[in-house]
Length: 124
Image (cartoon, rainbow, N blue to C red; front, side, top):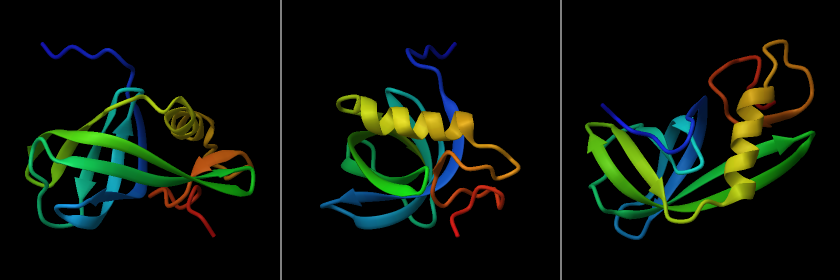
């Protein structure tokens, strides 16, 4: 049985993963928690134990805020990768979780992750 310290929240948003070993890669965040994230790579693979930075933008009531979270590739299964955050950036993870929790399918104003796969939440 898998044990989690933190609650995961599905977000389905586009992001970047930066690494000195593999450069910048476009990814999709599948879910995120205070301790890490599960991402999907557009192509290729990332090796376990690789040091990376997860970069994403949150639209906070019309103000775009970029967040960067240093992480370690904890596991990789094909093009799906588990990231473990080195330190919990409370502001960045909190913003992503708030955006996921408060996103309204009707597209009302509020916090939301930019680049969401849901057309009602996608950035203009």
